[in-house]
Length: 267
Length: 272
Image (cartoon, rainbow over all chains, first blue to last red):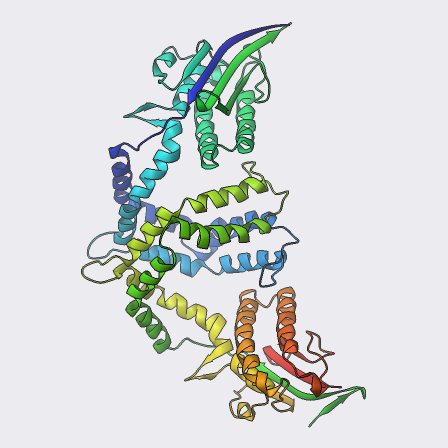
């Protein structure tokens, strides 16, 4: 059995400061779109019936399987009673929900959606900090260069310029960019992988790089990789394997990284 | 009048308190908004005193919230995104522990002085919530508590009834029904004020929860048990009363759905 390693790449997760313009743009976009957001909300969840269908029903459905059937609250409520309460409270909350949003989007002193806009202004710093602490560390930013979610898909779809996007914290251990999917699915694979890397990466960061949580996220990555990779090019992706994987891990030298290994074992 | 049951027990007191429909008086909701508005600066001061930094926030909010949240989650549960119960618990803790800055920013925002009005946004929100507060009060609280002006509700009447205060008979409302006897002292006189205050609180809580659940039978049973445990704990053992249990064969204080009167609080005291 001969094994040929075609690519090994370690992509670091950098510290990040949200570029000045990003938070300002977020605030400006939300303010400009306040009326549209409100209209969309009213069109989608403007009636009690729609609220039950779109919000209350799905929320209750998702809530009930979460509760341990043996749980009893301090006030003596059983799991069944807690579930019933949640459903009843939510089903009755349309008026409150509507009043609160109407209040937020109300025109005050000729300013449309004044309170909504004030809240957006207030939330700017928190948004900026959250973005810097999590999302931008995976996505990168126009002003600061591509992040893992941009670079990894380029390497795995064989982009010629992929290597030019590597940063000082990355390490191309072996090989070069390679298309691992069918050519017809290249674009779909690239987009799906970017999305999955943002989701799994952000979740892993949020969980303080917990190794057990990392494994869970790596299983998600395996599922995606195996749905797209061409078996003629590479082995099945297996985060716990030794021949092919795309996984989040903590490296002894580079720290927290996305580790990509592409190789083919043939008889 | 007393009613004998099978020669073994005698009903010495039986009353059914109705739960009337209620509209929150305008003066109540206006007063609520006014008091909150006046107290805005003090509310902020108190919040900042109790939670003045990240450590306080973790100790007093995030930690207790996670401790309450964790045992509720089924250990075998997996979210749609594949998260296990322990990961969900950890996520909740981590997210909450990190949210102090956001919490503080929101608090400052609500209580900021705008156009020389202290706590302008807070006052604004309170005013906007007046109707919703009044609706909730009318639906779940006032039918139980009543008001001083419109008349006391069952949470006060029940305590007076079980501490033998004869004044209660003059406070009954249309819809209340004395079936047997009258107000009856079930507790030592020295504990009467404790019974009244504990029962008032418990009946407000239990009644409100039962109404919220649309008179769910199982919840009603659980809360009726709680009420009877409380009353039984304060009864006078020298009175030879049949112990208070949430069961019609015993002495009881129970929320019930009566075929004639509808939703009621039913008090029945039996003697051996």
